[in-house]
Amino acid sequence: MPDPFTIKIFVPDGDPEGLRLIDRMNWTGLGIAFPRSKWPEIRQRSEFIRAGVYILDGFPEDGQQQDDSGASAPPPSLPTVYIGQADGVRDRIDSHYQNKDFWDRGIIFVSTSGGLNRAHVTWLEYALVRRARETGRSHLDNGNTPQEPVLTEAERADTQAFLKEILQILPLVGLRVFEFPRAAATPKTPPVIPPQRETSRESSKELDTVIVPAEIESFEKVFLGEDCWYSIRISGGMLEKIKYVAVYQKAPVSAVTHYAPVDRIEPYGEDGKYKLIFSLKARELPQGKIPLGDAHPVFVMGPKYTTFAKLIAAKTIADLVGAVGWAGKSKAP
Image (cartoon, rainbow, N blue to C red):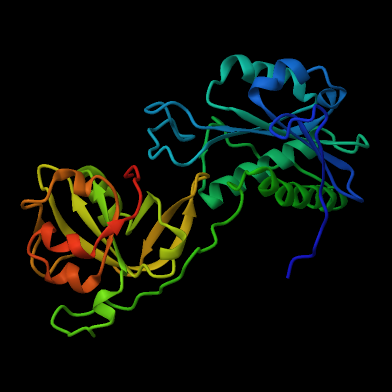
């Protein structure tokens, strides 16, 4: 079990959304969180002439997001992050303020005792970039992969302790991209129930399946290729109930065609959406597909809930209407 700790946050200008100085007892570091709009106003603070490591995060405009290889990196639900370091962070942030448009928040970590040198902050940059890649919860804007600098055994121990403090502070200012996802629900659905097996009257009424809309390209790449579906909103009361996910392929297919059992549900991105990870590869519905029929196309504009029993018996989407509830709109991957 992690040790309890206390964080002290000082708000110099009285605005909780503005500049925040983050400290904790018996730590030689200081965290500084600020919105991009405040940078011209706060850049003269003395903390910014120190050696430090910094993180910039935000969401680029639609269609302009790229991963660190330069390739297109949908979906936009994941934030874009840039990680950097400098002997004095002010000049670097000045440059990013002029040349990087995606970020709307900065978080800087410096030492209050002057204990961080260039090798230390280079190692922190290296460790944060590596961790961001391992967690997979952001798109890295870094063009280069930093190399691990050589530190003495004592320096490494001290710098690792500093990193631990950073990783404890970041979630408290709303940045979770360095945390490994923790399942919000773990249905661990077993191999799919054969269609011919009868379900009880009670279970047939229990909403346990979410239907998600998908473009054909996303369906093939993600639903079939990655054995998951992400960037979906699920109400809190449904998280523990979802056992299956089915997909509605948009025009020209215009039908529910495949389904999969759900192994676990994890947070996805920073805005309350989720990722459904399958326990088996998706398979076609026993009836082949459930066409749109007479249902209005708006019916399938966003995810919806139904029951597995209804799903495997339906002839048209209209057959699902009585058992389906809104799951909230979501942009497909």
